[in-house]
Image (cartoon, rainbow, N blue to C red; front, side, top):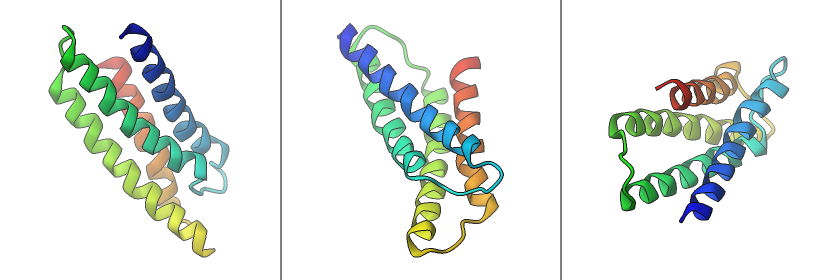
Length: 115
C-alpha cells in the first residue's frame, strides 16, 4: 500500500505542476494548454484515489478540507474545459478563464500545504 500511495502522490504532484506551470508559462498571453487540461483530470483521479486509500487505512481524513479542494477542482475542470473547447474552435480564451485555471490551482496547492 505504501508504494501505491507514493505513486499516487507522485502523479498528483505532476498534475499540480502541469496546472500551475502551464499557467505561469502562458501568463502574458493567457490560454489553457492541453497539459493543464490533462493535469486537472490527473488531480481529480489521483486525489479521489488518495482519499479512498486513506479511508481504507488507519489514516484520518479531514473531510472539510477534501470537500473544499474538490469544489475548487470542479471549478478548475470547468474553466479548463471551457478554455480547451475555445482553443479547439480557434477562438481566443478569455483572460478570466485562463487565469481561473491557474489561480484556482495555486489556491488548491496552498490549501494542501497550509491547512
